[in-house]
Amino acid sequence: MKCSSVRRALAGALLACAPLIAQAACDDPPATDVDWRDCNKAGADLRDADLDWADLRGTNLQGADLAKAHLIGARLELANLREARLPHAILTGVLLSGAVLDKADLTHANLMATDLKGASLSGADLTNAKVGDANMEGSNLAGATLTGVNLAGAFLSRANLSGADLRGVDLETAILSGADLSNARLQGARLAIAVVVGANLAGADLSAANLEGANMRTSNFTGATLAGANLSSANLPLAVFTGADLRKADLTSVTLVDANLRKARLQGALLQRAFLMGADLRGAELDGAKLEGAVLERVDLSGVDLRGISLKGALMAEARLSGANLQGVDLEGAYLLDADLSGANLTGTRPQEAFLRGAKLDGATWSDGRLCAAGSKGECR
Image (cartoon, rainbow, N blue to C red; front, side):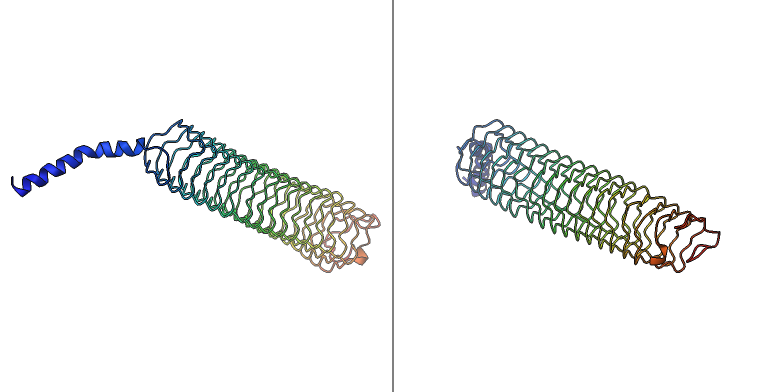
């Protein structure tokens, strides 16, 4: 037989066997290094299975039971683990980028150093799971349960955590820039020194949460609940708090430059030494708030009721206070250079204790009840 004929015969035999070889791999029992790429293992019973370093890329494991299974270093990119059971499973160092784990049970699972970039875990239960050093950039965790999870230092940039349950979760130093946390439950969560730049927290519940020193520049807190939260020394320039609940929140030394706090509820809030330059507080409720030593230059408090507020030592150059009610407000040492107090109510105050040079007082009601004439500047005429 000619050599060329022999080569053709051998090639044909190998091609004929190829499907059988592939099929045999899918039929292999669970074992370390098993190759189940693109295999269908939906609903499989793999409890306590040893699948360390297994190749499960693109594998269909929907509804499979992997409770207490070992998958250390396994490859699960683009795998389908929808509604799979993985309680107490060990997935350290696993590659799960692009995988689907929607509604999966990952309670008490070990996901340390796991790559979950772009993975979907919508509605998944990760209660008490270990995810230290995991990469969850761009992952979908909408509606997921993460109570008892330690996410300190986690990388969650651009992740979708809308409606997720993160009550009491440790997110200190975590990276959440651009993340969607709208309507998330974050009561008592710890986000000290976290990076939450440009994140969406509209409607989120952050009651009693700790955000001390967090960087939340340009983040959206519209309608969020932050009652009793600690935001001291947080960085929040250009942040939006429209209609947010900040009652009794600690905002000492916070930076809220050019922030939007319209119609925010700030009753009893601590704002001592806060930086509020250019902030919009129109319609805000400030009953019992503390503003001593706050920097309020260019702040807009037009029409706001400030009765009972202490502005002692406040820096308010060019502040807009037209139509504001300052009845009985402590103005000792307040710096109101070129401020707009037209139409403001100053009855019961001691304006002589404030610095009012250049302040516009047209139509203002003076401390003694006099109505200031048009063109009054620095003093009531």
